[in-house]
Image (cartoon, rainbow, N blue to C red; front, side):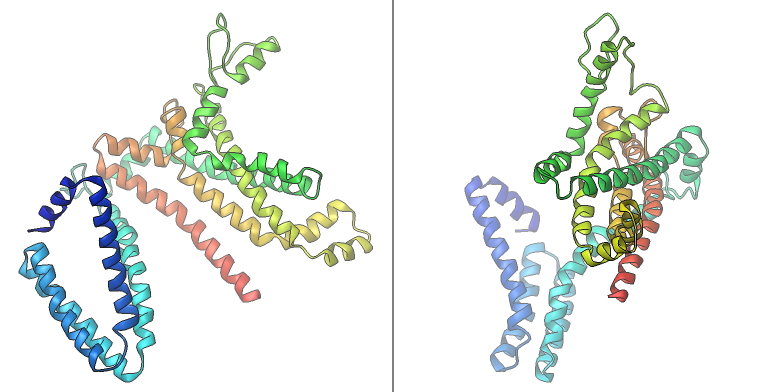
Length: 379
């Protein structure tokens, strides 16, 4: 029985039996991890025999499961080397090192398979044609920056990154200051934070109804257009007229992220020592001077975290744009255009857009990491 046959056979079983099989497989994996972490590094004759048995049983199981001598040979080499090292370390009294490696190995393996390898494949694909067979050099990048639509996508993304973090942080900070220590503080914070519990798709649908347009001869179902009609104005197509439609989309992400900024900054403000504020007050500083000279410097690490986190969310925004305009009417951004090109079977262009998005995110991540390191050094 090959691995494919085994999984096909599992698929034919009743759902309850499949669940039991998954639990058993999970238990086997946990047992293997426990063996590597706790039992294998121990010294003693019986543990040495157990390691030698594993060197034989694991390759045989692989050969039976995959029906491949090459897999069995490769696994035998790896397992033999690992257990030889385990046996050597256990005799040398350095089992703790093996335990550390055993704990970190699954995380490194998942990081390698789930992040590093796909990133390298995407980078290589960005220099290939749509089928991924022929090398085209910088043609995909030239296509992006050589036409107005491609440049507009990049510019729109930059506009999102400039506006959303700034406005969300300022509004969140204002909420944190004015709501803090007021009657009904918890209720107000719940109301402001509530949009964070809504998915971006849900937020997009909600605001699509807010911007909904009908002709002047029809009753309006969109809240904003109904307000305009109440004041004697004409209903507007908010999502069709560039460049204002991009700003109306940006409002949605600001609405969602403001609650996040408020919670983080409110917790940071509560951590500002009262002694500093009282000392500034005794020196004659008014409320605004205490806020700008004492509170803001004290919560600077939290401000950096909020700004960088919302900046990354703005760079990879997709759901809101896709739900509300699908990127039409000059509202597309990098993540949406990446999906659009991929759906058109333009894998090379999609990969190039992904690389550009990664390049834009990378400086923000590096800056955030350096700031965190500086704070650790200060402490």
